[in-house]
Image (cartoon, rainbow, N blue to C red; front, top):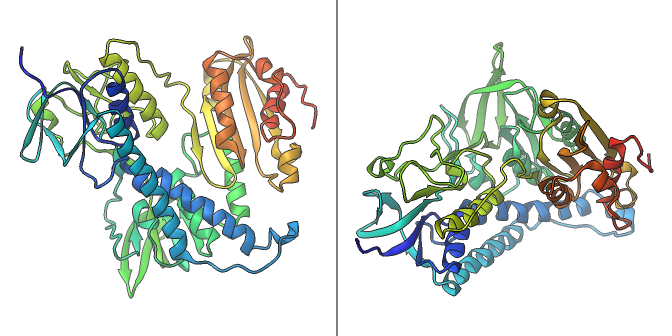
Length: 465
């Protein structure tokens, strides 16, 4: 029997990777994690989920005060923006959380191998001059920004940037154009809109937030327009350049037509993400990627090569940190001989704008294709807590099977939508019905009562509307 350096070797320390490494170590397996960044946590903790939420929260507070909303509550006084301090608190949050992962590695005796990993065989990965052999190798290298052909991103110039560059802008742009009406573009566009920028979103499709429930997409568009964000839908970008310190963007109708030039101080390219598989030398391990650059896996996260596993953004499915984390736990348990399962039909998704937009399960369109359904809706303006807090925008929508009443999907637009969706996901995980939610006592007054009322509305019996 060949000698192995590790029982489990994880490539990548993003949410999926670091969770897989920690869980494997907890299960008594000798574990190491390869990471090339100076800090652990991958895109999510360093330049994604966490820093964007820090800026979203801070910009929400600034906008509330600067717009006069707080004055209506009896909280008066002028405010000024100190952007560098706002950036500093973002960096501090990142430093604390990435440092926390490093502490957990030490606590659980996970070895951090610094550098980039590339396969040299089915059980061997090279990291610089170091060669590591492992019984099990987990590919968890995450994803990176999808480039837009013909457009060069230069984050240092702070004119044409990606999501990483949009977090580091040294000043509030006069006009920001966001290419892409998806989650990341809307979140970062919201940040700079609140801080004073004019924001225009250019989207190739005829609606924002592809993949979400159709009605929720339309309602979200109304909310964003109400907030002052401008949209150019059914519009494609044909080119972009920099002239005199400004970005010049060429656009035309998606179906074809006259070209228009848009001048902007900053252009954010945000058209999606792609799996990080380049540089892994997968061929030397006997692996190949599919047409989307993903590593195909079985239900237990094993690849076609025994002993090599894959999770997170490099495999099919939504590119979400919490999906990767759950897969990290499951793959470690499968490696240890336990049973690790992730229910990919119940993965919540959230857009952390204000209000938040959250969903889990099937859209109404998807559910209708499968059979007869009933739908219950409840507006946040009729929820006592939301109304009291001046957070009346949005709604809750519950989709249930017409015969069994089993909940098939829940969609929420609310200030606390990202938190509220957890109850829906748990109910669905247990095979719950709309009646189960409707007959569960909810604390009053809370935003979550809107979910109860929407569930009651499935049977046509909401109380407060």
